[in-house]
Image 1 (cartoon, rainbow, N blue to C red):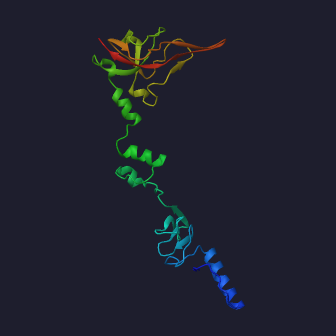
Image 2: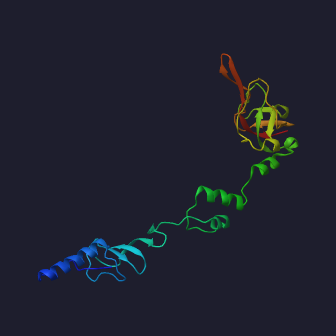
Length: 225
């Protein structure tokens, strides 16, 4: 640990060498000391050993020192000044901290702990929707070969909703099949009359030549009767 005023006075050769070595020692140790150097310069670096902080003098050489960061000597780490720490699992799951940074893992843990909707819950919510009342909105597939424009209507028997058995699927995922028949596995027909709130899709023929497939994009429907 060393500090120096960085002024080499006229002196005898042995004293000059000692004074120069002290100045070099201050340089290589970042002016490390428990207290600030008594003689300071603009943009000077000082390692504060009391607080384990790396500090810099401002460009006008006036107080206070600018804290660049903190060093954990035991862990061998440096934390920049103003850098936010990563949230712990406990902080993520509690959901009240507003000073730490969330990683994708912590976000997933927070969702699970704070009531995030699981695929099983989505499937359960869709169970029994075949008898939904008028005024209900639902994502469903138009199984007919005829597209329904936004605002158009269709019988519920031509629609299939995303049921509990298909909870692992995205409810807006396009269903694809190699035949012209809608793949009804894990879907349930609706009843009543429904209005397309977005383009209602219908069967789309894709591919060509020897390879032909059929797609049914999902849409939002409103039961009107």
